[in-house]
Length: 209
Image (cartoon, rainbow, N blue to C red; front, top):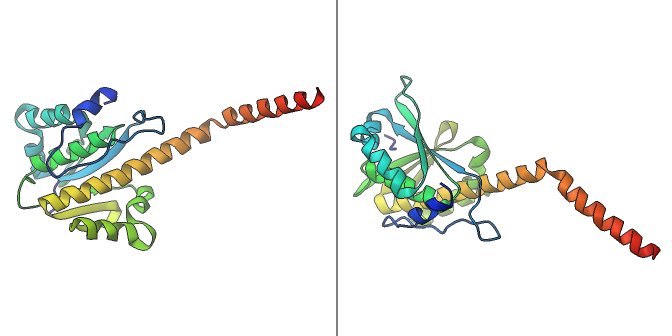
């Protein structure tokens, strides 16, 4: 079976959940990325009530402790629901996933969690000829299975699952941020052309002098 902010959120995201680490992710200037990254989990519908809690208490606590934006898809008759986590800060995403795993019963013994990964993002966790995913398996000792439609299931002892989750979330975060930055550059080609034009114009006038 499958288990399951902005700058102000960053401070809340730093409190560690035992066994779940990760460095804050920043731009080259040292500030958090402004664009939200998104991690999507697949949770069995029969466990959604546990995650939400009485009158929403559990999911509200997870939001407050992690600083992440978390939404749960509406029930449409399927056996599973999507839990989407958003934040521009890597630590916040990692802590939210850890807290969700704990809420679903992953505080001791064996546990599992499933990520839904878009086809374009799969390469960022699989690597060339599967080298990256194999490295994560060997490093963490977790069992990681990539199923149909981009479902990535992590199972094993609690700390192993948390360790693998940390790395996978980091790879997905970094891929999304790179794609976002490349998209911004692609939408603003005029800025670089303008700089080149000014540089060329300045060089020409110097030559004439």
